Length: 408
Image (tube, rainbow, N blue to C red; front, side, top):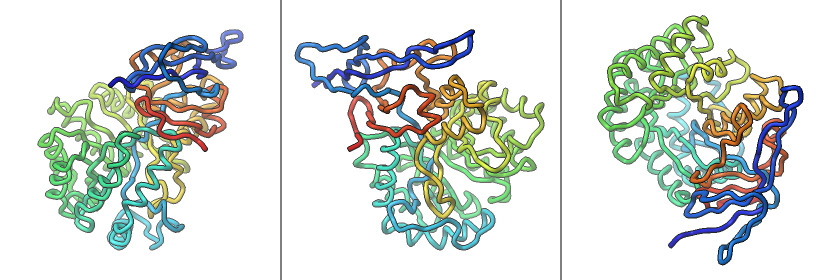
């Protein structure tokens, strides 16, 4: 049976207000959305009522696209439990962190379903309806982290979408996780993960070839954690790009996560790599690191590289600072890369929404449109620029037409 209702009294961005050619503000207007079976079937100016059709009042709130967290670790969070700071062992490098994980994972597993559920509640309240979660696949937890994550996600299937990356956190070769990875992919993981093939696995070619083989064999994409510096990190990127040249089935299905080494190379080399990444459909997932080399993200976007972002470690043994808010990431983008103008702030929202913006650069309405999925958030704000600058609280979240959360 068809599910239909009208969402009235909702404010949508209409265009930019310009003075002497410079954007000075954003114009909004009231609309009514006709939502049928999870999609927007019509958009009416002003308030509209239709005989026999139920309606909801949006309260005059601003409607923006729901946010997308493209890099998070749902499976090993401290969230939902007692306070714990990060790096309790004093670990200083990736190997120390692996040892720490081997010690604490068995203590986290008994309550991981409950803590993941609590974290999903936080994610939802922040306005996110899509997450790509990396999940540990290694001998210490075996497949238990994945099975617990799948159990925690089960009641959320109608509230948000989650794709899972099978992530060999302790090194694909170093920890002997190849067979576990195959089992994880058979259980439904959508992505093949990987980690620092030179530094952690000690053999870039063997490690990357094993990762590529897993992806081709399972028909999955690759989401690769790369923390290595330019001495080995750029070689890893080049190897993966060459592999995509040889294997057309993987084009458009590779995400590089972090890839800090791109901030360490000369402009000419960055230009070359950016062009190849764009041509092969490679995405870059950056969590917008603060305090280190600033990632050249605006330049990569200009060159056509698809940019993603995520909240990574919300609170765990890696970091205690995450908020689970992708609007925070848009705010970080604005502080890193803009001067805080109305136009720049409105563009910063893209990093939080999977590059979906209400207005084009020229000020034409790009979202929402008829037939779009009805996944969006409502906020008490004048426009998206204010939301990014002032981190306006989310008032309601809709996923595929259903109101899945509202502020009490």
